[in-house]
Image 1 (cartoon, rainbow, N blue to C red):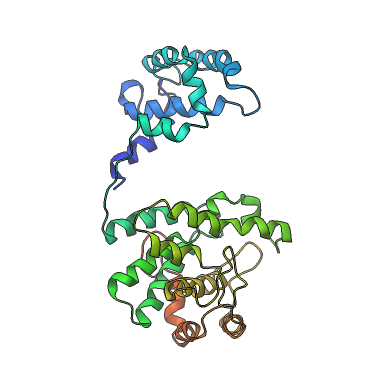
Image 2 (tube, helix red, strand yellow):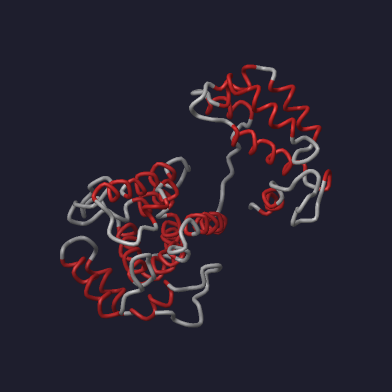
Length: 320
């Protein structure tokens, strides 16, 4: 789905004069869309939050014009100069009406996707999520594969298994809003830091809520830190509210996290993983039956969780 914009993104930092461009492109050889994004990107970077937007007009325009014919397409700079004369251009950039403004200029086009297309988008998003930290580069994919494996074992249909897999791919979407210092901290989080971490499932819920038809996927993805005992987060649901798909993702998430390297420890050995999951099940945190399903086929689940992070196939070697 995104193939058509890949080159636009790839070249959006190419300089107009071609100096040190890895692509070897210069001037009009650079896609016009890339040149537009380059200029827009630099304008946005120059805007400061602590100064009233109209007071920034002159220095920003001066900075952009100084780079015309060097960094930026001179025709685009001329277009920017024309737009910049209008106060509404600058006010729009920091407007509380930004949603309506964008809807006017760029009307949203809806597109119905099949499961295979949704899966492709989810796999792309999972790379964005996981690459935020070097310690989670396989996590979402691992959770998705273990979730799908568990869904098959409890008798879900093929389509339903794919839905669970998509939820696994997207379960940590909200971590894009969590500071790296917390995600990569080499030790136990403080109570305050853990409170910040709790936002990620709340963010996941509200992001996925924006997609029509994602109600089931959203529940499975955003409830993976809820517990059957009602002491999880962020909604404090209990066993009567948590559907099987969400329970599957919760078990898969814990298993995958325990069996992968983290900033504060190496992947755990099998005996310790079994002990922790058993304790979690007995305490009412996760589903006991699903935990048993997973632990009965531990090696198969481990192989699924450690699959190649750049595709969906399990890797040939186990790394734990």
